[in-house]
Image (cartoon, helix red, strand yellow):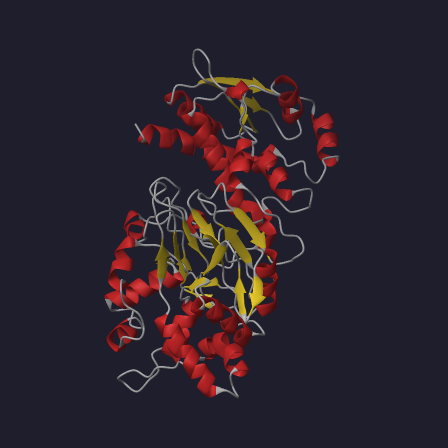
Length: 477
């Protein structure tokens, strides 16, 4: 049985597709790209935006017809079918508004002189499956939700009744399609709008749909893509209850759709959720995952592109753990270095605790992710920084490891809350107060290098990760 190479949104970028296939070892023979041991799973969005939609479609379909690939429908293919289908009221199922016409313009221009061919492609789009599942993994364009998949199972857009229902958000099929191929959204607070990547003001916010039971509920922690603009405040329990919640114990799922920023590196969104859309439709690379049985064992590949860093989430987590941090006897402990800006906390922490403790430090994680390049903190790494930091903190407390971290500690109540959280899960807390004179601290701060991130900026991350880990451990019983 052949292995799987899973490829994200292509959006008319034939050159990137051909370069990536070649990099993965596929060779064109009789008009079909083939690999002796592998085949491709495409996650949808073949059309719009890019300069060579026709070539992309021909490559993908040739592979599908030859049994060398499976192609899923993306929201752009479904949108196209609805755009060109008339409803019972005589109006197109997808309105021909200025905004929607602009989204579809590149494709229509490229097929302007061959309408019969375009109609054939619309018929092909209508037959594309919406999801794919093996014994080891799942794939869908935007969001895996068991409940909504049951509303569309064994159906496609060749069925006229389903075609029309899928375009109607008031029908179960239409609501399911919105979730599965576009992802869940939350209504923004009254009077609040956000501008999307196309400059359109939106009253809804696209949100995360995994690990909702344990994660924070602030809008900024839910927004997709991670790090996007979000209003202040938290989602209500009622709002959270409307969002599909993919559990951490479920099999890995691959999606596209979300236009992640390639400059923040290629990495899973969660331990079992992988997005492979890194803006290939514009300036980003086309991304593939070579599935080898688990996310940690799999490989990520990109079409040739400058400044792309690929992260192995397992390796990023493991770098903070070794046998010396294990608690062999007695209580596990957390050592907290407390002191003002540039008081010497990091210098003394490296001198006094170079080993024997898991370091929970946003600045250290940020330096690792930056790979020697300059970025503002947390810059493009906000989502990935949280993912790794939460992972490190939770693994450390679950394994009863000794921990070390740094805080300014100026907020007494917040610091006490962290102390109480750690003692509540059986940790002893050792606080080390670090002081120095003001003039020395000012000189150190002025001489601080670009990669020397102050605890002033890192502290909120560390407190959040450790308190969240304590809460999660208590909740697990």
